Structure formats: structure tokens, C-alpha cells
Length: 333
Image (cartoon, rainbow, N blue to C red; front, side, top):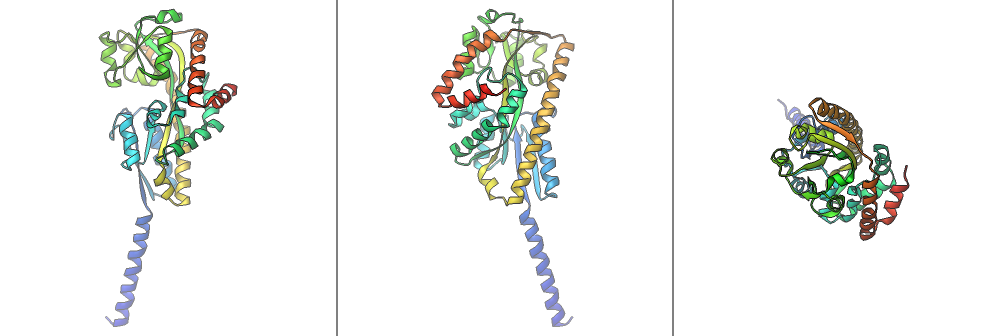
């Protein structure tokens, strides 16, 4: 082999190495996590849609690794991992986010804040949603960037007896938050807020540790709570159209190039649409399953409940300094 040929060959190999290295450097991995372990849960459905769209639009240069409860089943674990970089994308509830010092988030846990899914969507997909996203980014110092609003359903009461009037709640031990505005709401109905871990709730309902609980159909029916002694009577109180935040590590997002950022945002929007559609379908599906399994469902006049909730909403809004946001939400129809 001549010297010229050897030089040419070395040059070609070097170019190939540099090209492959550039391609490898352009690939990124997104570790996405939520706290639900069921493969049928809408969180998993939404995360898999994010993965599908991100990988397709990037031609595989963005790889998404989805963890369904395997990085932690408690939200504090997931948020800590997001902050430290052990996870890049997580799903969390407003209730936990308030513990990170972003008090304005409590706006989304106020009972009877929303009167329908349509109302909820107009709020989170509009000006209020944009304002909250900016607040989260600023208050967390870019640890958290909100890129989508998901739903965890509309929450109802279920217990050992049906509720026909608000007086039926007096003395009822209900598994719910034991502090904050949610706990205060249930106290004012006459119920007794009681703390029970989610994984222990089936047994707690079966063994009279609590008389009742509250959640959305897909969640408590998947766990067979409606089959317990203290879970078979469901009253559709619709006290909370729940919000979940899809968060990405803000610094990692900012480090991406413009095309990668655009792909991430498009994948997030696709996941929002898919997760909500799946959730809305599961609401009807799991209500039907509960009834087929022998649960009893009744509706109730929500007016007395809303009357209790309104002054609590006003009080929290004044304390947190977001009276104007509350008024805007109430004005949206």
C-alpha cells in the first residue's frame, strides 16, 4: 500500500469516526416517570404516547425510558429525582407541589373550583394555565418546567352508606388529606378526615379503619375498593376535577437545541390529548364495572357542598394573593 493511499484511508476513517461521534452526541435519553403501577392506568397511556411521538419526530435521536412506579410510587421521590437529574420528566399533583414552596398551586386543589371537564379545560389550557406555568418555573428556579396539564378524573365519595344529604356525613371517617383546605372542607361537612396510605386503603375499608374514601372511578375501581364492606356505596359528589402537572427538568430542557425542544413540546401536547381522552373514557368504563360488580351509585344535590367550599376558596385565595385568578376562573363558563 502506498503512502498516499494510507494517508487517504486514515483520513476517511477519521472522518467516519467524527461523523459517528457527532451523531451519538446528538442523541439524548429522557427518563420519564409516574407513580402508578397498573399498565391500564391513564398515566402510563399518556407517557407511552409521549415516548412514541418524541422518538418518531426525532427519528430515534430522542429516546424515552418510561418508568411506571419503578422509580418510586411516592411523589416526593419523583420530584426529588427530577430536581437532582435522576429523572427528566415526571407527573405530580398540586397537593404535593404546594409542599415545595409554590403556594399558588393550591388554587387547583380547591373543592368545587370547577363545575365540569369543559370548565377545567378552558382554565388550564388558557391564560390561567399559562400564568401557573410561569409561576412554577420562576418559583422553582427552573427546577420544574410545566409542559402539560393532565387529569386524574373527577373525585366522588364512596363509603359504607350512601349520602342523600350533607348531614349523612356527620361522624364519617373519610380517607382524605388531613391538613389544608381539602381537610377543612370535609371537616365542615361533618366528616372526620383520616390518613391512610393508598396501598393500605383496601384493607382499611374492609376492616372499618375508615368508613369512606374519595377518588375518581378509574382509580378506586382498579383497586377494587368498591368491593369492600365500606366502599360499595358511591355518591357522585364531583367535588374535585383533579389536575396533574407534567414537569420536565427546566435546565435540561434549556440545554436542548431548538429542534429538540420543539419535539419535546409536541410530544407533551400529544400526551395531554391522549391521556385526557383515555381518562374520560375510563370514567364511564369503570363506573359501569363498579355497578356490574354490585356497587350502588346515587347522585346528590351539590349546592350545600359548594356553599361550604366558596368561603374556603375565598380565604385561601386571599392568603395566597391570587384573588384575581380565582375571580377569573369563576367567570369562565
